[in-house]
Amino acid sequence: MYAAFRQFCERLLRIPPDPEAPPGDESTARVFRAAPNFYRYLLVIWGLKTLAALAFLAWLVIVPVVGSLALHKEGRQLGWWLLVIPGVAVPVVVGSRLFMLAVLRLDFEKRWYVVTDRSLRVRAGVLSIREMTVTFANIQNISISQGPIQRLLGIADLRVDTAGGGAVNEAKHPERNLHTAWFHGVDKPNEVRELIQQQLRRLKDSGLGDREERPRELNGPTEVCGPSLLSGLREVYREAAALRQALQRQAGGGPVIG
Image (cartoon, rainbow, N blue to C red; front, side, top):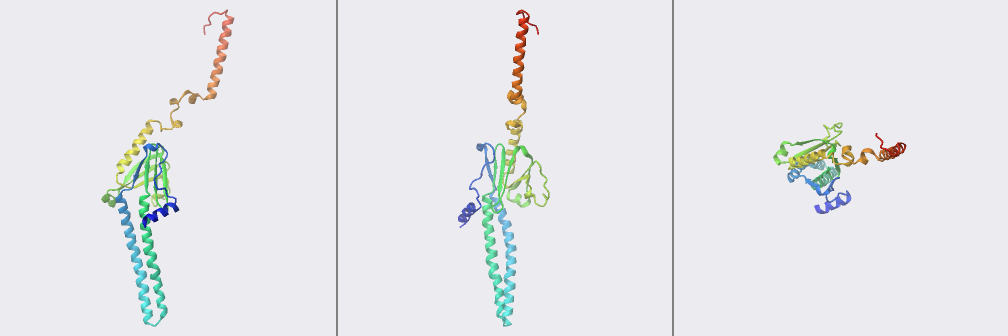
């Protein structure tokens, strides 16, 4: 049943079956996924929310049933209409929690972190999709955070900050910061951080890797001077050669000392 739900969501929401590599050499692309313990971590959160929902559901069932019985003893037949409330609430609450469980599993499976030699891409979410591509030239800081439960499960979150960070209300809604990419629930955060730092060092040593970003003295003479300047220099050279020949004729063919 879950496989049919996943295929339906992939078609409806246009979720690609496999991760797509960001700009860069595809042969260098490395795909990281959230650890299995991250799924267990999400299950714990889902379980706590489900317990709260069931407690609310119990209140919706007990109160109408007690009220209906009380009205029935008084001879009021309309009291049975109160049973409509639990009759509607039970399937709605149970169905919604099962639906969120399926979405949670699909969100875990469709959470990708891809790193190439030039950039990285983070994708997460099913109903609300968050996808972010970051070039290494814009990265300013890489940090790792780990809470008590994450430490117990052996997972951590890797945070990548880019230029222009510090968005408004970041403390309240850090996930909405468009200048921060998150690797949630990875079991080898140090390995991912070291890989990104290696690419940063390599690009720094090679002048950021792009032709237009290299120092101009490393490029050819055409890029240093430009076509118009080269044309002007050739014209000056031709005029200087003609002047030299004229001076040689006036001096009777003798050598001209210049």
